[in-house]
Length: 401
Image 1 (tube, rainbow, N blue to C red):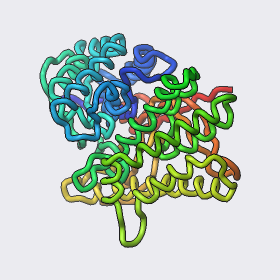
Image 2 (tube, rainbow, N blue to C red):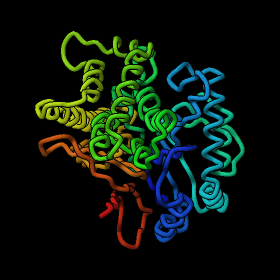
Image 3 (cartoon, helix red, strand yellow):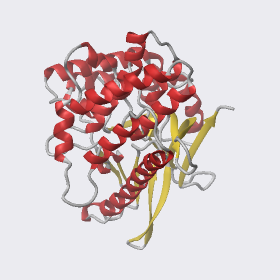
């Protein structure tokens, strides 16, 4: 009887077909990481569990070649664009997929793939999904990529964390507003500045790394302040994009669907943040207002992650499980949940494997950002591990001087 395998959970790689990625090529990242896996896996194949957003099908300039958008109904035109993006990722990262596939075909590694919000459209594109799975494993067949997986031998429930993010969830039949934010604001800004104004600045591409996504407006304002010659064109282009975004019929429908009689109104808060970001000059009190809004969003999301984890572990079908693992926020965490059925329960967020611009929220003045390269994962070790390990949560960051 086979023993428990070495099982590694990670998420939010966001491989893209065109946008800037990590400084280190992904085949080299896998090679360095495999050295750690190979030394601990024992005789059984190790297992990689991708907890969502491995590919980013939303942030691609290909969407602007026509009128089709990822936040529309996933019809044939959407599926065709998804297929082109997947093919672009496979070509761009060919060395990585070759290395991964060789490990799977040599029976050293198994792969599990959960869908997140940025790769959710794979569920509606079977041909592209099949090509991706073939590239990853060499197994040329269509597979259903789930949104949740259970690993009873480790006591783990895994799913992507967007299920508690109001901006990343479908609302009353509408796709997530985060799809529109990511494409119409985050992807379009550097494209428009280069196309209309001839501005070439590699820092513009870093807008894709700003986290949380609703901190993008503050990052835009900071970039304009610190890049000579960029302030006026950048702010003018940003104001134009925000106006177009708020007049988008899909955005209007989403905002109206969020209205609450009492309490938190995500649509109103989103409009407020975007409107604040377009002002030419903001008093310090309004800067503080913006920062406080970001802090409230972040703390609210962290609390919802943990609350959702407890609720799911308490469900009858999950009896006996005591770990919940997900990603989404790009901020790794380990949260003790308390005792369930006599055992300590724990929530892990797997963070990300890509660069991050994280907003500081504690000092006065205009919001600022810390730039670093992140890498986080959770590992469950085989029985009889020579070091006596059961679970390890690893998180690291590389900061420039």
